[in-house]
Length: 383
Image (tube, rainbow, N blue to C red; front, side, top):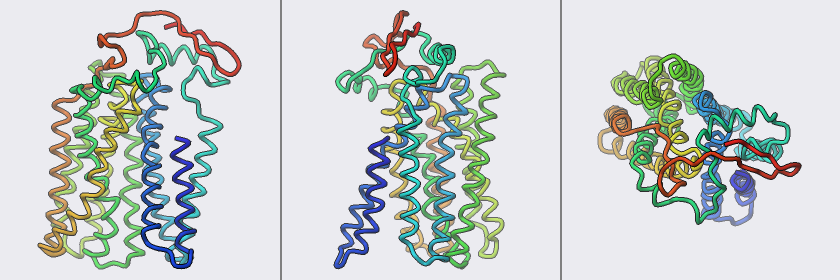
């Protein structure tokens, strides 16, 4: 996480420096932006790993969903700041300064206030620490692993890993449709000014953030009140996110060029309902193997980046071949279908059952006492 935040922040500032250098080449700017993406790659994995180490089972749904809702809040701030900088200050470089400062703040916060595991936190009580350990590792805390100990073969041949990857890809088709093409849609289709389009494009993300709070509370409540396997409740979230969200996306392409209000309502409902995937497959990525949550998240998120560089060429190709009106109609239908099909595949084959990849026999660890050394003391934890 520290490497990711540091690297992305440095190259963010370098983008501004390079662009002002006399005789600069676009290749250097492209390289800086590429490196920002490369350093940002591990961030999701680091956050997922932290959630896995700190969240008792009863709080995992809420912690995972609400923590990652910060990603959507960041998009809202980014769109708003981009509009203000471009159309008020007329100085694009201030936007990069703004992003860089936020990166520095996040880096400082992570360095001074975040600890990998509960037993390393200097001020956690013994009771709270034991509560977390009892919830996360009832069969015993796995031994600390090095790179050579990571069970890559058992991980990548496990049948429950790939359904969440399919779900992640399907979910991101709608997410990237909004992230990369919503403002463009408002500008091209409804012929409104880019400044207005950038502001209106924030609305679905605001609705998604609110719905993530509702989704987290709803699924957590159902898990507590309805005594069914956790997989059952994850599928409930998926039914709402993968099946209902596309339903509101399909008719968007049939909205007339004067129906911008109707289009925004449909798009906001679609983006809002897909928030229920967060307490669905997104949390399940942690459940299948908490000790390897960073790896499973990293692998899944790598594959889920595919829609990010597929959606725009797909849209441009459809518009070039069919025109703006028909192009967007096909685009929304294709996006909705891909999301729905991927979600159905996940719901059929998914499971939240804990996978013990760290043990060669695939079984849980025997009970005992784990001893961890911190800076101040050695901590014994009953396992």
